[in-house]
Image (cartoon, rainbow, N blue to C red; front, side, top):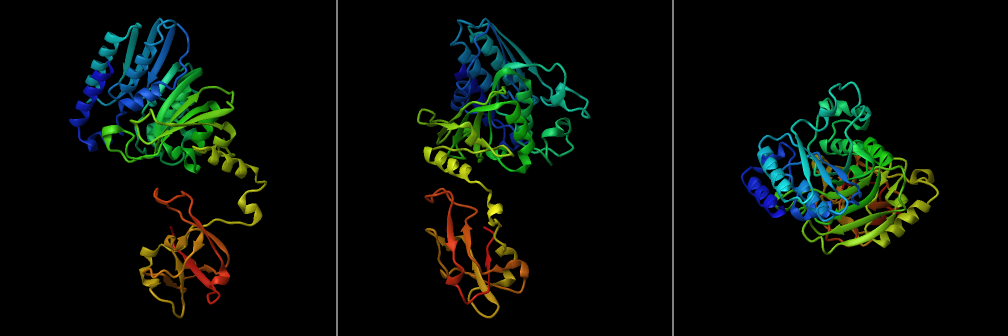
Length: 411
């Protein structure tokens, strides 16, 4: 069954330009990822199991869940599957794959395909929040690879879920929030989504809803950005999350990681304390992947004060060099002060000069310079080739006593 579904999906992908599918935010799950996701559930032992696939595509995720459930026939008497899919091009493939599932499933399977918008079909009054809708459908298991694209802030989906939106939202986190809403108490959802939601003010409302109404029980991260969606050639930092709808906070979160979406046999596994993974007033999610990182987080949590309270401020480098070329200089001179780049940070120290082009900048614009005082310089971008993701160096003002002012490049 799975081989046939994959073969048909590959044929569909090869016959449709990526740009055409990108318009729908449609990127297909590899079979290895689908199997891994389906294997994450703690399936309930009950006669009838209700499953939801809110972004069904060709039905790969649904097929792997059906395959998993067929290994547990002793308690399950019936499977009820609901698939949402609005792309008319792929509906015939989904329908034929559903027939395959029915044919091969040893457990009676009933399927409902909904061709309407997953978010808006559950209520048409956009002045009222859908998350407060009465008598919604509830499911035991929800599995999804949701669409990925930005909506305008006045899109019907955004207006219907205003309490989790900030600005122009991405459709993927509306799907995730609605799925949690659609879960039965104690039910589980497994989603493959970008990492972007784990921090920052843009996703704060979504995190607040997701982590208040449910609890993270498992996270899988990929060390490669380019090998997650198999043949799809997508460059995206992606993660798989498992969320249980419960008010009971677990002691630990199971965190696994792999290089790509194929080699799930060679993964690292770690159980991290929940309060370290989900912490802070804004419920940031920290993706710790080693015991060393857990120890670092524990030290950070032991600090009595945040940095501003002890007089430390963080700011981004002042000078965007390519926008201010007329101020840049190759040599020192009157009114020219050092301009420090990321390249000047070497093994925890600041090395200057290094013979780099445009190492100096005139001090004529006050907004481009800062006082020559002690700093900790931190690279804003680092390459994976570097030993540490966090690259910093101590800058001591008395090493450059001839300058009253200096400047820092934006990176």
